[in-house]
Image (cartoon, rainbow, N blue to C red; front, side):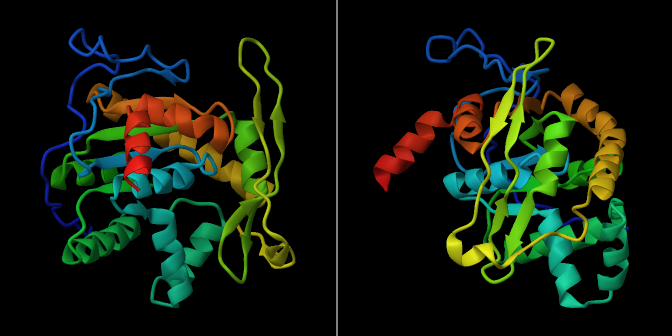
Length: 284
């Protein structure tokens, strides 16, 4: 199996082994825990630098890419999505292209060997460009991948985004991409009623501008059968992975309360980055 390159490391943003909730020393300036967080373990420490090394977990369609990308821009670190690496390889007509196409269209997970190889090449290229830190999206997905990652670098924080399965299916089936500009949109209108103590979830569609409307395409693997297969496989493999990071005190589970307008400020609050975003806006 290919090995990941060792990532250069400076001071970390989040301490290890602490509980999520603020210590007494932080209590004077820390807010109470968010109701959207559960099963803590990761510490919330105000950022000292932007050299973060984070992982985003969550079922396909939960929005890992959306929130990881926003945090990447805010913190000035690269957002590395293994899904994007796979799609780039598919588009390249390289030696892995046909094999990857069969795997993706059947809704199966790409093997550890292929993912590690693609990610290793991306990290090497980033290191050559002088990149510092990263936010990984879609890796690790298996215990073996987590062990490989742990061999080469220290992960500060693992953010596990959560949504009910029916919402995930609707979101995946609503995904669209403009074949001309390449931007992603979502035509699904989510309105899940709350029941049995579970809060309702409402998400407005992310509609394209007029010029993109006639150019929307759907991913070949975004069919109900394939989406449900991906969710089933993910749930089977994710539980030991979540427990692995939970026992290390690095897992933060976050229930998305709605779409971006509702969830983004809550996530920043959970990460203690709400003040940081305000400072960045003033500086700009």
